[in-house]
Length: 317
Image (tube, rainbow, N blue to C red; front, top):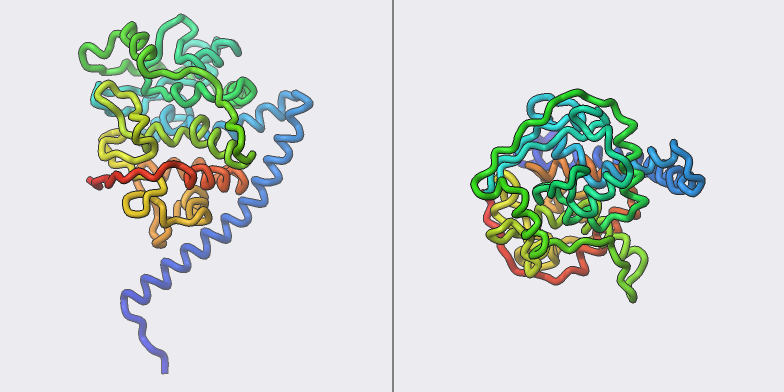
């Protein structure tokens, strides 16, 4: 005689099945990504165009360029811009960064691309608003920046005009950004920390530069700069007014109870330790980090676990 399952038992079985399926897919993707990473890494030394583009695609996924530069909600095309981002300073629209020579960045040379990411300055000499995370990308190596450029320039150019920002007074004046940079912008590539392992340094580089976790997970001051005393401690006033969780190792308000394996599963599969799935903007992040190798994901997890534990309970809206 078969026993009938109640609703909670049925839900638990269904959730376990989803997790099992995701982990199976994760295993297969890990094998493919490992092969891709080895191919890209070994091919880079020859400086071949194809290898640079392949490596650039990996960096493109890590840095999540499509998230801000593609208007997915309105079925916009890849990197053609138009996605709105609401902030306390006004509404910004992601620009077209396809290789189109009229509306995109098709006329940018290598030095222009490096200058934009390293210094937050356009080819014309205008300061970019820090909604563009050059405050993190400044830490990228020239090699990574140019490989990223190689991939973006291999994509289809799209002739789509940019949407003007809608910025509140007086923040629309770009000259004010020069002063903001003097106060808050630390320009320069990532520096390896002596005494730490290669894995830790790789995790720090990925977290602070490429994946730029702190751009969302670190609270901002009244002028929109990151509050470095609360790095990765989360905020209830994140992008578009969303709540962003504390990812420091604090046991009560952060992720101090998570194992490194669980952190990897969040980044790879979007599965939280309780078996639920991430939501909101984090789903876009995990769509990108799912393309990273296991070694890179473990490096990120290791670095996050080494951060100072900061008690900061984030109120979920």
